[in-house]
Image (cartoon, rainbow, N blue to C red; front, side, top):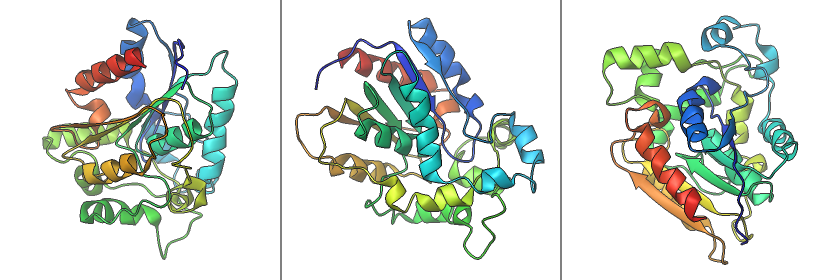
Length: 261
């Protein structure tokens, strides 16, 4: 694939958390000469505490679907003056893969990504961390809010209680059950055989909700067709990878990879 000199980066947020988690990443990438944006999801353009206080009246968010969310980011990406680099975390990593697959990005980085349709997440820790968000036997007209206990297992395992509580207050927000469920449908489909812009998938060996083994299967699903597709597993990273003390090491690895491609 032809290389690109783009200097625009779009950070794509995952489920359950505020887009404010990208602030340090934005500042760091901008210090390296990039222009960045980290757009909020529809109905999530407010601080975490405000969004939590909207329950149970956040019915617009409850009705959001993955296809609408992908189109939301596709519209942002195509409105930019140059084809951007996309960097997404978790469900944002899935959206990154979909948009790269559509040919809308100069390159993509999927950090601890939710896998596309067809890659079965059978790992026990994934099922334990994520099954409540599917909200089976509950109303899809109500959003799901992860409890502190679930946050501790799914995102911040291995961190101190003080760090877990602080990160929960700063980041955790209600989520659409329909978006989570749609991750199991054709809305999450990627054509693994299609040529694409350079794509990097990263994982962490301590991640419960998106285990490294799941990311590796995601990577191996891409067919060798001349496209750059790379994989990197980091040691000591849980799912709160964007906010760990090691985040800059991850960012530096990504910046170096971008420089190569």
